[in-house]
Image 1 (tube, one colour):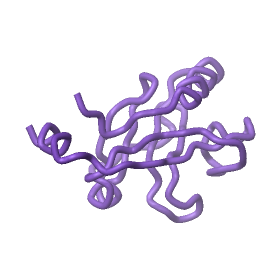
Image 2 (cartoon, one colour):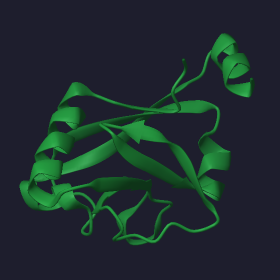
Image 3 (tube, helix red, strand yellow):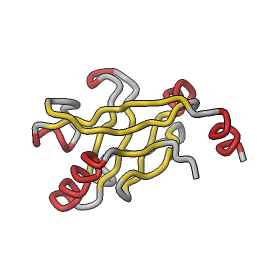
Image 4 (cartoon, helix red, strand yellow):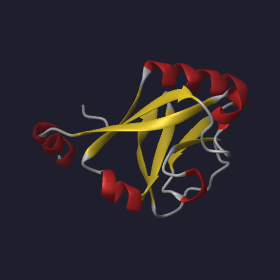
Length: 118
């Protein structure tokens, strides 16, 4: 099964660390503004999901949302969430740990696009 969003092993480890520290968490792919376009991590329920947010999938057992307009730009790609050293979004939970989540992507193959359309 083709996934629209996946995570690296380092990201999955960071997710487990954050869940141990904060309880259930969620992700939202930011569409710009103050923190640029980055995956933001929140305690579950701290960000209100709106009618224009799309549930892209789950990483590490946590829901991952993206705004419809961002989804329209990126729907031809698989988002690969990584974690790297450095400061990221000021409201994202990993920031105080000296880490930041980063979105990488790759274009879906023709076969994957067909599978996603089913």
